[in-house]
Amino acid sequence: MDVARPPEIAQQRKRRRIIIGGAVVLLVAVTTVALARLKPAAPTVEGGGLWIDSVKRGTMLRQVRGVGVLVPDEIRWITALTDGRVERVLVQPGTAVEAETVLLELSNPQTEQAALIADLDLRTALAQYEVLKADLARDLLAQRVTAATVSADAAQAAMDADANEAMAKNGFIPNIVLRQSKLRAETALARKKMEEERLDNTEKTLAVKLDVQQAEVERRKTMAALRRSEATGLRIRAGVAGVLQEVPVQVGQRIGPGTNLARVVDPTRLKAQLQVAETQVKDVLIGQKADVDTRNGVTKGRVFRIDPAARNGTVTVDVALDGGLPRGARPDMSVDGTIELERLDNIMYVGRPAFGQDQAKVSLFRLSADRSIATLIPVELGRSSVNTIEVIRGLAVGDCVVLSDMSQWDGYDRLRLSGSPACGAP
View 1 (tube, one colour):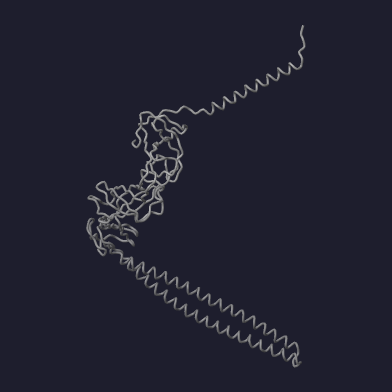
View 2 (spheres, rainbow, N blue to C red):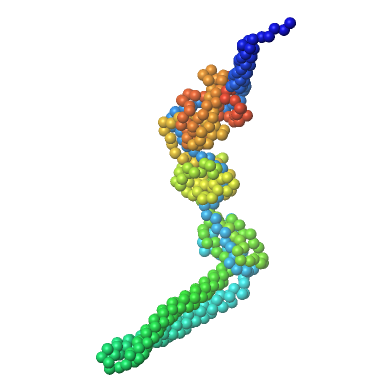
C-alpha cells in the first residue's frame, strides 16, 4: 500500500538536486578555466645553433654599410649635334687628351647653309621689330592727340553749360537753351571717358604687340646660335682633359644628332658609388667619414652626395676618396663601403637581432642564469649600427639574449635550451 509523502520532503529533495547540479556545473567551469590557463610545456631547442649575445655598456660606433663600384669622378660623352658623316678619327682610345683636342671630323654640306639662313632670318626679325615699334608709336601719338582734343571739347562744353545756367537764373536765356548746353556737356564728358579708355587700351595693346615681336626675335636668335653651333660642331673636341676611353664610330659611318661619338674620363680621379638600404640612409649626412674596401686595400673617404631618390630599395651615396688609390684600382671595380655615422658613449647595446630595427619595440628571448631556460620579454631598442643596436629598456648589462630568427617559436614564451650555449658567440 503506497503511503503519501509530505510536501516538505519533496521540496527538500528537489532543492538538494538543484544544489548538487549547480555544484557540478561550477566545478566543470572552474576546471575548464584552469585547464585553459595552463601554459604549454616549454619545447627544447638546441642552444649550440643559436646566436646569443650579452648586453654591454660602453661606446658604440654607429655605421652603415653598402656595396658599390668605383666610377670616374668625371665622365664626358661627346655627342653629335647634327647629321653628318665621319671623315676622320684623329685620336685612338687610350690616348691622353686636352679640352681642345680634336677627336673626330664630320662633314655635312647642309649645315653651313642652315647657319646662313638662320642669320638672315634673325636680321629680318630685327627689322620687323623696329618697323612695328615705329608704327605703334605713330598710332599711339595720334590717339593721344584725339584724346586731348576730346578732353578740351568736354571742358569747353562744361564752361558753356555753367555760363548758360547763370544767365538762365537771371532770365536772359530760355530754359531750353540751358538744357541743350547741359546735354552737350554731358555728351562731351562721356566722349572724354571713352577716349581715355581707348588710349589706355591702345597703350596696353602696343606693349603686347612689341612683346610678341620681341619673342620672335629671341626665337630667331636662338635658332641662329644653334645653327652656328652645329656648323662649328663638325670638329669634335674632347671638352675636358683626361683619357679617351672609347670611340664607338668608324670612318665613313653616317650618324644622327645625339649619337655618342667619344667617351673621355680621368682614371686618376675615382669615387665610390655605394648602394645603401633605404631604411638606413636616413642618418647619412654630407661630410661623414667612410672606409672603402677595394679588396686590394682600404682607403679613406667622405660622403659628398646622396641621391634624393630610392631605386630598388637602395639609395646611391657617393664617397670621395681622400686617400691614395690602392694598387689595381680602376673604373667599375666592385667595392664595399662603411660609413661612420656617430660615436655613442656610455650606452647599453647588444648585437643586432635578426628582426630588430632601430627605434622599435621587439620581443627577445632572455637566458636564465644557468642558460637552460629562455624567457620571452619585451625590449625597447634605440639607434642601430651595422652589427649592434642600442638598448633603451627591458634588459640589463650582462643579460644574455637570443639574436637568431625565432619566428618558428612565436607560440611560446619559454624555451628549454640544450647543449650549454655560449653567450656572445654563434
